[in-house]
Length: 79
Image 1 (cartoon, rainbow, N blue to C red):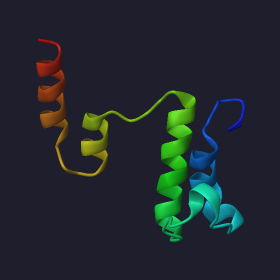
Image 2: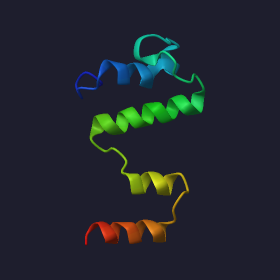
Image 3: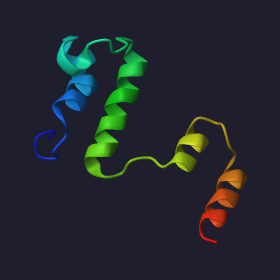
């Protein structure tokens, strides 16, 4: 999958470090915690699929902004 979607080897290493328990190459220094690793895997998979999360979506997901604020920001970006 990673090769077919032209994912850089360092990104693939970070995304799969927890699964394969191999903290080497691009995965050196990556937090080995499960939840952190799943976020890393999600981030790389989104990037590989061309569906990277934009800043507004990220703010919504993390609870930093409300849906109403997100809609206001989207409206501003189309002006």
